Image (tube, rainbow, N blue to C red; front, side, top):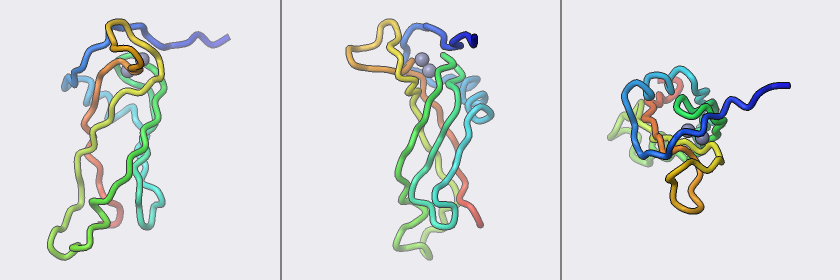
Amino acid sequence: MAKDPHLDIRWSEESPAELNRLAAEAFDVRLEPADRPVRLVVEGRCPACRGQLRHVQPIELFLGENDEDEDIDSYRAIVWCDCRMWHRDAADGVTGCGRYFGLDIKAAGR
Ligand SMILES: [Zn+2]
Ligand SMILES: [Zn+2]
C-alpha cells in the first residue's frame, strides 16, 4: 500500500530560491497544443509539501497580434501550489501550501 507522501507543513506564502530550483526539475511543463499553444500545463509534485498539483493557465503572450514587434520567446509563469489539501494557518477555503514558483517557459520552435 503506497503511503501518501503529502507533508502537512504550515501554510506560508513564499517562494524560496531553493524551491524554485527544485520545482524546475520536478514539474512537467507542456504547452498545448504544441504547434500553436494556447495554454500552459504544469504537473508534478510540489517540492515543498509533495502534494500532486496540476496547473493550467491560458497563454496569450506567444499569440500576440504584434508578433513582429515583440519577439517574446520566453516568459516567467507563476505557479502556485494547488495540492487541494488544507494546510495549517491557511485561510478558510484556501488549499495548497502557499508556496509559489517562477518557471521560465520557452516558446517552442524559436
Ligand atoms: Zn500540500
Ligand atoms: Zn505545496
